[in-house]
Length: 442
Image (cartoon, rainbow, N blue to C red; front, side, top):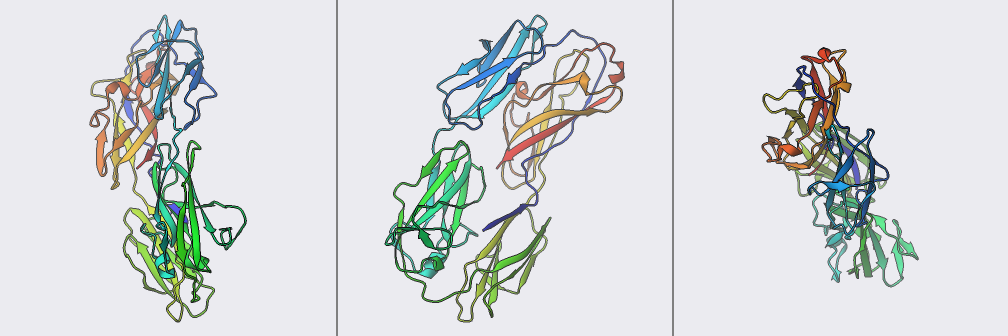
């Protein structure tokens, strides 16, 4: 099955926030430390991590924190060992005579565990007729073949399948059982990089040209590079295909625009008719012409499949196309009431507001940058982002919620501060515009 384009993906979102600014005076600030490369890979299979860091200004000492523990005096480089398989967070701050800087942080995932694999079809040591094989995969919208699911903390990167014809010792090479060496061919993932996803490997009953025993083996690899190959494999028996059937149709064009989708297709065998299915909508195929259109689609995941039907009713393997119609996920926000920016004044926390119009919850990690100001000659150099949002947040489906609503401590909110750089009267009364960029899973 070919994976089509996503009309709108809720993976990167942006919005702006406006702050009022008043003029005042204050002392100097301490520049946050800089983390030096290389940083730990994310994800990684290593259970140790080393960080080197420096500050652009003279400081008295550094303080480090691991996984939100209390800050303790540290020096560069700082090494941690015996790290568990989980998310980790390292932060370092600089201490100078003028005070303490904001933290510089890095988050990464340690994962040395192999992915988990489940095979939904075929079932071990079961005999299948051609029609039973072609109807066997229980995953909605998937073509005939081998299918199942895979799970891993750092995300499932890929799944591959090998098929062996036992009597000949030859492996499936994508067109026939002719390979003398085992070949793992890529399966289609429902969601690449997801911590839990379905997968399918398209191979119709026409591939099995003789009765006998066949062995299926499945290999899964996660984002950290860990690999699992399903232990003993599965044994199946399949009778030969006695009745010729049309080859799968070819989708010669597909147009996906917003809430509309249309398809045109053909087949190399003459005198065939076509039957189509769009999921979610219909569980079975129904008669269609040489093209098919679907207007007014609501947000969600869709799969279109078409089969060619011969004069004797013999059906081809389906040809499928998958796509997504999405809705927009937004981020906005405001400072707490009464808090404004002033030269050298205290940091101002940002209470982010998330709107998730989708039917499933979404876990979001956000990065904030200063986009600009509302007036000249006051520019962004007068302001510094002291802290990013310190944690990922899960936004319920069909909801608008703030960090405060979610119970996120104000100490973990993004923080903005105005520096004291002399006469800054030009900044009085201007607006500061922020940009939020987020990545989400759900």
